[in-house]
Image (cartoon, rainbow, N blue to C red; front, top):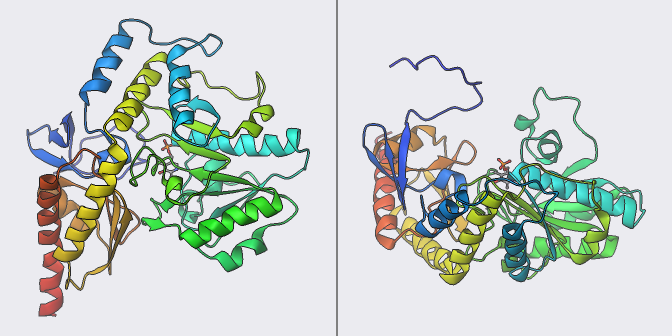
Length: 397
Ligand SMILES: *Cc1c(COP(=O)(O)O)cnc(C)c1O
């Protein structure tokens, strides 16, 4: 069937599905077909679709005040900042509307701290191959993948890319202009690749030795996804700066940049701002989200279900020659195949399970953190069934 004419820019290769309703772990399309959601709007709806507590707080806030300028006090924002700092090593928060904006704020803060507080003249940030940090000019320059940069020259200067998980090579990328190292604890878009603990320790050591800021992009890995509230908490490190967005407000657009006490001196009124950052509505949704995650210990649930998911996947896909590796942390998992997975993703969708790829050969699983073991069993049956087709082809060939 021909696609109807669209008045939208063609920036997405959209799946041929129109979703019209979401409820918990399930989504429904415009024909009434039900899907089990193992994608979560890309790690956004971690409490499931339309979680009751968040919905109630949002509706209550809609009756009071939708928007107020950041030139006024905002109690919801204060409350959210307290919740986030009390549950991390950070001391201060800046609210914005997306992951790219949160990383943009992190880059600005790192540069400004070195320029105004340390007066070091350093501005260069080391990021890693296969990383993903966003689509603004600065964050796509920070991203260690050429495909996002094509056609956007001239790009801002001040970023260099080092090989990920290569402890030996890293120090060679540090020079007298370096101000920070920025990384994801699990490279998500890059194919679900975990940072090695030894590599993270080396980064922390080099940051200490060379007075560099350690920036962790937790836009996808934050908010319980990996089995801790923030993924860096698995590694026993405290970043100087870390960023959040996707799951922060259960699907209401919101980003946050969090930093240590010493960094507060770098920002004064007028040095950074956002019209919509942390509106009363967005902050209400985020407060409800964070409180629910803490009260119900959702990160621990993600850890436990993640162990179950990876063990069951490993068992059920064992012996399939198309499957090269199964990896992940908590409820961000990748099934790396020996060839392209786009046809498999489509077939999995047709069987009623929503998944997404991460690069050409990896099927990425990002269920909500409130799925059940039954949901996991159902998902694995579908995935194993679709990937078994390759086994048949391989053994026939
Ligand atoms: C999604 C993502 C971003 C960009 O977030 P947007 O809200 O799309 O701007 C940045 N970093 C990581 C790790 C992400 O997964």
